[in-house]
Length: 455
Image (cartoon, rainbow, N blue to C red; front, side, top):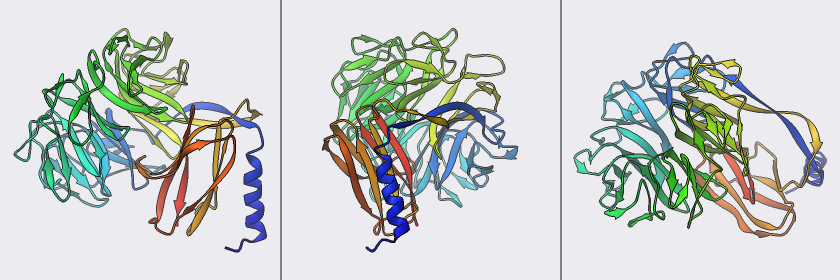
């Protein structure tokens, strides 16, 4: 491909920038999100370039929005006439937004706790579940549903069930003996957490893994209810209401490395509640949300950041009408910022309404001490191809992943041990549909993402 002088110059500048040991100084602030909601938020996901939130509200940004709404970066709007009851869980499956909770109608369609939105209209999921849905995810191209139910459209399903567009409903073994509250994918296995103590007849204290055929425990499990699951530095993180994980003392949050459980410092504490309801990774750090007031002995109030060594506060965290007993129920990255939704009316010094965005703004340039990884691409937007430039400051294992905007992995571009140095990968975009993608790079202590736009 022939390259003009301007393009060559820009590419050269990008390559040279990798040799410059600089780091942006960051100002971290909370911001209001379009006047927020009139009641609390339970779930969030990115769909079709918008942030979707669901919960117990009936208005968003001052406009009617029944239990579910979308934020386009500027304003709130409803998804049709919404649903008629609480929304607890959201995911994206086969290009559709899947919504779970406690409701019997979506738009004008009669449903039972589960519905799908195609961007224009509501419909059922070809059969619904018999009680409350509390969690949703996608595993091996199947929709996985967890909750309080014991049947799916009359099909026996003990608290967890799968849906495939070709096969319909299917069992995951004999399921659980009590509620499934959260679902995640880790090391190519489905992870479920909740109230249960057996999975597929196997003792699995509040957490279990499904390999597509059978259930297994994660060591000795967790010593209390698991409400949230996340991934951090190639480890699984569990949060909830518990004081131990395996044989380790772990206050409401713990990490599984595939073999053993470990704690995050002294974990979470609170004067009223001690729940961890939400976990996500943002800019290489782990963020935990819930109803707690302390993290690792530091006052955090409903949300905290773990940098690999210690916990820190996000400008004082959250308060609800003067009380610090509540906090974040859901966390989601959108347009480069972290969005927290839950039960709170202030975030830091900002007056908000159950949702706020955490902005990290560059304020200057400092000398970078030992940068581990940097990533850029050119051109962006692109059509036929784009060159991805990345640097390994130290030798180590590096993964370069192409994800959709919801964070689901589409393709592994690089997965190998690399020596320190500069590298280039040319992504062929001819087979990619037009849209927005996330390019993620993972190495030791680094987890960074940039947005790619295919024209």
